[in-house]
Amino acid sequence: MRPGPRNLITDVAGLRVGNAEDHRVRTGVTVLAGDRPLTAAVHVMGGAPGTRETDLLAPDRLVQEVDALVLSGGSALGLDAASGVADALRAAGRGFAVGDQRVPIVPAAILFDLLNGGAKDWAENPYRGLGRAALAAAGDDFALGTAGAGTGATTHGLKGGLGSASVVLENGLTVGALVAVNALGSVTVGAGREFWAAPWELGEEFGGFGLPSAFPAAVEPTPAKRLGEATTIAIVATDARLTQAEAQRMATTAHDGMARAIVPSHTPFDGDLVFTAATGAKPLPDPLADPFRLGHAAACCLARAVARAVFEAAARPGDLMPTWRARFGDG
Image (cartoon, rainbow, N blue to C red; front, side):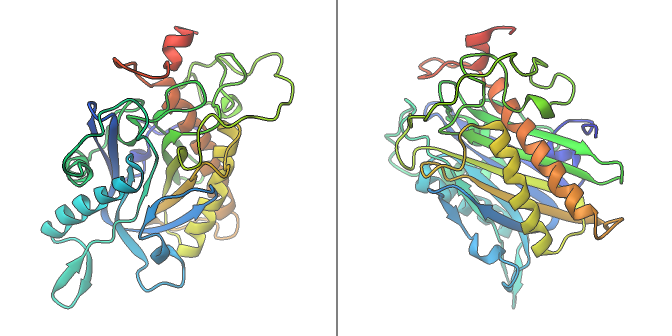
């Protein structure tokens, strides 16, 4: 495996990502859009999810494709970001055709960042505007760390953030991951600098520190956040041509990457969720073996993206938690 040229989910041709942030509020929105509608699916493993339009992603539903996917801060209030994206897509003539009308299909997931020290005294919900701005900013390159949906994110003891990674498989298919990490668990091992995702690191994309020589003794963790205050939300993507059922299996398998990179993960306090987006540009060279390869690649990419999210987080005045760089410097 090797990373794509950007080591971002946009190495999957035909995908664009945009971020929008409000640093006063300490929140933001990230939008993934395609040049064409995308086959999409979702799998939820956390106990406290917040979503919009995810029921229609089941393989037996009428609508089989989406126009964009949205990751947002703001808890349930952040679901309004998808409305801003849908407004802009409809104005551009995008959406599911119903007679002479177009209805953009924009599933969304949110994380909780309402207690991170930002000013939440808005008179009008800001997320609709942030969603529209994120879509307008969508392109091949985008910021990681304290950006987009990861702007106000936190983890156990460190700032969270927005991460991404990609890989090009030997069969020519590309897989990418995009994640906003706001976890109850920790992405680093014990009190050290090393990331749980280290075995899957390619090059030195999050420092190249490997794993520590010794691991902390097994403990029963105590939740550092309350029910509903955490969540890691992600998208894995590929240029392969997948059915919606195959896309759902890819999303399910990708959760392994979250569990490799965040300890613990998928708790009753987290709303952990993974979307899949498939452009359909390339047929599966091996219809039997390639879905297996895609699932494994998606899990590895997601683990790497989680670590990059925290590694790239930037310090800002008023932070309630340190960044990885503030705590460990150059490592």
